[in-house]
Amino acid sequence: MNTLLLSPLRRLRELQLDLPSLAPLRVLPLLTMLHLLVSSADNGLLFAPLAAWFALGVAMPRLLRSSPFWYVTATILGTGVFLTWESADNHRYLFVYWSLALCCAFSLPKTEQPLALAISSRWLLGLCMLLAAVWKIASPDYLSGSFFHFELLADERFAHVASWTSGLSLEQLAENRTLRESLVAGQLLGTELSQVQLHTSSGVTTVAQVLTWWTLGIEGLLAGLFLAAAVLPRSPRLVLVASLALLCFAATTYAVAPVRGFGGILMLLGLAQCEPEQKRLRYAFLAAFTLIQLCPLPLMDLIAALGLM
Image (cartoon, rainbow, N blue to C red; front, side, top):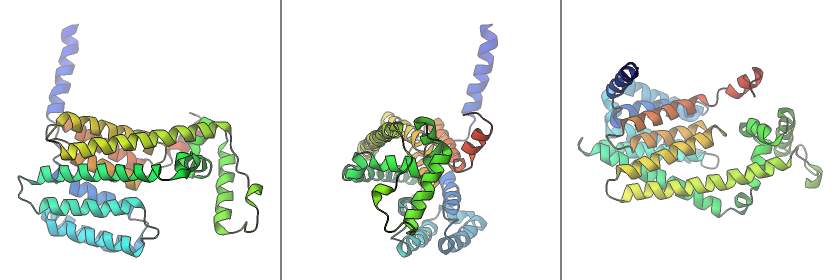
């Protein structure tokens, strides 16, 4: 019996050993192009030149692993951010920094490129999380739980989570969003704030507090881990712990609020900073990247329609 069980296990291990190594310098240019195109599809001003430039990269694959290619990419993305700086999402800035990181890595001798890209990725992850945590600490509305309280009541991305945890119906949350849109459009100008009441419940307050402190805590932890990994001598264990924490952050954040742009680029950075021998960890980041791309699909609506929740 033991022999029969061990045979499939050995075959499984052999299959794992035969998996491609997912060398970052080979897979990341293609994944980055895909992610940038998908995330820029709603911006006609940026999408057209970016798509044309990436088409040239596909036609001439060697360009993808050259420094000038990513310098031009960073210039296109940076121009888009500059022209829309007042409304540009935070992850669009990170797109520019990541393109510059690829540009710098490919400008070095080939033997130095993997380490340079890994260190750059750790710095970007660490500083991104540090600045996010500092902003939250400096924002009284965030620390009080008001930010997540409002988002749970009036943001469509949180609708299913708010409904599951608070007892509010999806119809009530839809009415909240309609009222918010009316306020933003100025249709209720002159109405006193006390007369505008969103549907809420005591459960929303509890969930908002949990999300507030969990997000602040995990971002602070990630900032410390990745900055330490960037500064300290090579430590595969530290990189492993930081990577697992990042995957945990992605699972708890983007399953609740699917933000494909930010989530996808964080997973690419995570893949880039893995140590050479951490092949399974790279596949974990690739799987997380793929799942985040699928998050905006109406999966929750399908689950609800099937009566599974």
